[in-house]
Structures are given as C-alpha cells and as structure tokens.
Image 1 (cartoon, rainbow, N blue to C red):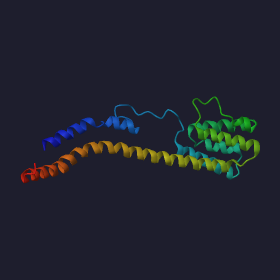
Image 2 (image 1 turned 90 degrees about the vertical axis):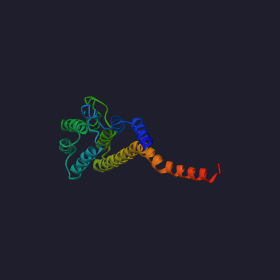
Image 3 (image 1 turned 90 degrees about the horizontal axis):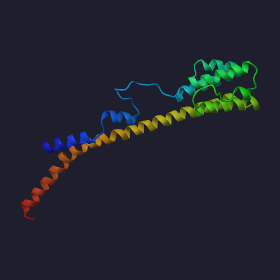
Image 4 (image 1 turned 120 degrees about the vertical axis):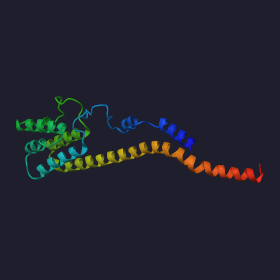
Amino acid sequence: MSAAAVLLACAVLVAAGPSTVRGRAGMPERDRPVRARAVPGTDALALAAGLEVFALCLTAGMPVSGAAVATARSAPPQLSAVLRRGADLLALGADPGIAWLPPELITGVLDPSTTAVLRLARRSGTSGVALAAGLGELAAQCRDDAGHAATAAAERAGVLIAGPLGLCFLPAFVCLGIVPVVAGLAGDVLRSGLL
C-alpha cells in the first residue's frame, strides 16, 4: 500500500496545480483582483439583444434616428456610442452615408458586429434596403457565435479536467488492478516450475 501512496504523491506533484488549471481555463486566480474585460461590448448575447431591439423599433415604424436613440439606452457600450453618434448626425441633417461612418472618437477597435451594423445602416441609407431584416440576421449570427464559443469553452474544460483526473486515477488503477493480477500470475508460474 505504501507504493500506491508514493505513486499518488508523485501524480499530485506532477499534475498542474489549481492556479495553473484556472489560468488555462481562463478563470481568474484567487490572489489576483478580478478585472473587467478590456474591450467593452464583447458580450455577444447583449449585442444580439440590442440589434433585435433596433430591428423591432424599425419594424414598428420608428424613424432610424429615433430607433437608434431608443436602442442606445440598453445596448452594449460600443454599439450604444455608435448608435448615439449616428442618430445625432441624422438629427442634424447629415447624409446617412456620412452619419454611419465608423467614428474615430471611439477608442479601440470596433468589433466586427458593430462594423457590420454600420455597413448595413450606410447601405440602407444610400440604397433604401430594409435595415431591420439585416439587423435580424446579424442578431441571429451573434447568437450562433455565442453558442459556438460556449460549446468550445465547455469542450476545453472537459479536456483540462481529464488530464489531472487521469494522473490521479492511473497510479491507483495500476497498483490496485494490474499489480495484484501480475503478482498472482507470477506466483502460479513460479510454483508450476515453468521458469
């Protein structure tokens, strides 16, 4: 039984510690303070909800500038800033192609979904294409992307969990399952005089 304890201790020493596992899984360590995400508006589900609100406002018959202001109140920060800027420029009488240009005032890089919203709004303002349908499709795509990201994170967690569990249970399986069988067979072989 002491060999099993030694093997178990070796497995614990070789296995990754809790802080390493938390770091690989993207979880914050207990020692470090929890920080907010660096890029605001990265929540794909909140972005999809904001896009659907914008599409519903347009479907209900609101003007684009009014729908943008109504949506900006509950949208993620990056989308909200873009919608407020576009609505303000439209209210001042700017051309829709200019009002929905990507702003340089927002610090950081726009995420692809916000850039797609601006592109849809410019196309709608210049060619008359219905904006609500494009926003609905973009919201569905954001939800699908969030689902795929959650599935990938769950699969990564399963892989990260399997390593330490294997390192802990493998020595016990060898010591309690294989060694007694081999010892029993070796005893029978030695007693029969074959060797």
